[in-house]
Length: 579
Image 1 (cartoon, one colour):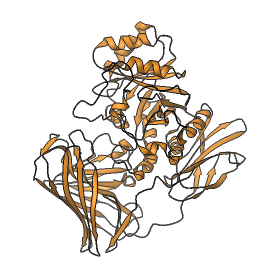
Image 2 (cartoon, rainbow, N blue to C red):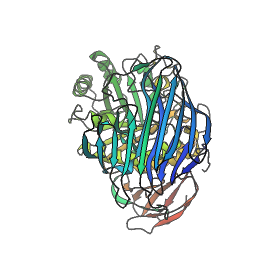
Image 3 (cartoon, rainbow, N blue to C red):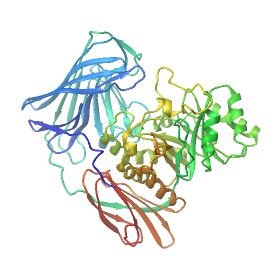
Image 4 (cartoon, rainbow, N blue to C red):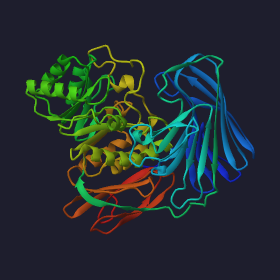
């Protein structure tokens, strides 16, 4: 269960004048002056007209004692942008400059520098200088903010964290910046970016146009923060271990039946011709069906879908408006009517089909008279880095906690959790869609999603256990992950199951027992348990780059301890034996 294949990128650390920057490909990561991280990252990004990220390539790096310069090429999706990203120090300040030459006329939603502030800045006081030079005191939000917490930024003065030294100031040049709370998408950061979203987008950048932006950072030299690596996870008894589901495969036929999970999630887009075939292929797995419906205003497809549910094991229906991607009052009412007229008795849920972001932003649209709240999440919305995949786990726990509070005692159903988004909910033009009534070309995410090689990796099993440990809190009734078969699945067609299938199997076996849950001490070690009779079963996961010792405190039982290789997991019982 162990390999280092996840951590392929080699990082280079540049240091000058007590500053240090870790160079991870095109990203300037973990920017420090002394011990603690001041900024999570700075990056030059180019997005196309649909908010898709144009791939960035580092073509050269020149480093010396005074500066480091990355030569970048953003190419693809109709873009060709050549640029230099330079980091230097002067009089104790860190200066980051981006000079970009656009070579093709290009329609973009964003082209410029983005700054990621660490999630640990939550609650930190900050003084904002606006573009008109006015001053406003505020703070980073503690709860995940549905909308931009800070607007119209020319400079930020970040007041000291508890136990830290001095203030940190950032000045932004080249455009007006604003901030969003990326924890909505399970990113462990707040993002300050340029070109306010109040301006029209996408917008055109002419061939030959040059973009210049710069960020200047001043920070006191902080004390070293390295200390003992925390290794104890404290589990608390309470709630019920959630049911574990898997989404039906969206891959092209033929797709064999699959028994993974205790229920099957299937999303039926009623605006496409494949929905009936997708329903019946999912039903062939013989498991209860958690149906998600995507519908427009025409009531007839809803009536047709409700009629098709007869004699199928439907445990829940969650409708989403095809434009809003949330369950507003209208779509819920029309779905309720269609189910009643077809004589279908099942749970009617509401929520968001895209991200927690939309649940957080559109909660006023979502009616209270439903049987549960459902939403999905993906760790790789803004970045494809493995670091982001791992850092998303503590944010998943924060999202689950906030969602349970928003649900107001209604059960929360999370998933499908997938590595990449299943569709682009912020697309500014129609996406690809099937035209056939059969599944010879697949449906859903087969057209609108993206594959990821890490789906097959041994580490994904450890990540899935950690994701369960993050998301499973009292109030969360079910969690689903991935697809059954295919490039986004637990199994490849005609091949052995991927390692994550074993993790799903053990999670499925624990449903209904008393939940033992707890937070990670550092976001890398995770544990979750289930109590039944005189035995506790505890799953421990290590997402660190190195082997880790661990200790799990279990209420009323002897503590469990051991060691885990990097990127692996294990199953323990209260006797301390590894199974």
